[in-house]
Amino acid sequence: MIFKVNKPYPKIKVEEKNYYYANILLNDYSSNISELSAITQYIYQYFDKFNTNQEFSNIMQNIAKVEMFHLELLGKTIKLLGINPKFIFINKNLYNNLTYWNSSFIDYNSNIKLMLKNNIIIEEKAIENYKKDITIISDKYIKKLLNRIIEDEYLHIEIFKYLLNKV
Ligand SMILES: [Fe+2]
Image (cartoon, rainbow, N blue to C red; front, side, top):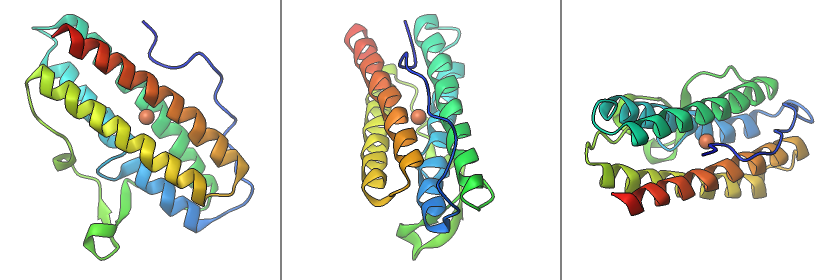
């Protein structure tokens, strides 16, 4: 099984510094629906099932590694755009206050079926957010990067659906 699409990633590059774009990417990097949340969500599921469902657990570990690579791509891009890659985001639900990422963003359900259903939902929301960002951001390098990340997230949905069929 492969966990990332077999295509190269674009070079981490930006046309110029842009704080507005950096703040948009912070949302994908470390908000409630973000790469950081996906990593910790999947690592939680990996640890929770390591002794009872090895196939599921191994897959979650491997997908978490791909999400960590996505985090790296976004973090370095945010830095190039001129903002430090802190794990914060502008919270639209809280009067645009700067909010720190926290572990309450994770779903601690222990039922594999519900875990997989939740994972599909967060991947779908992530894709939706990336697609929206691509329409707002005009930097060609960032557009390319987000389009490449989206391809992996679609693959993750396929894997979760495959697992969901088996449980
Ligand atoms: Fe991702």
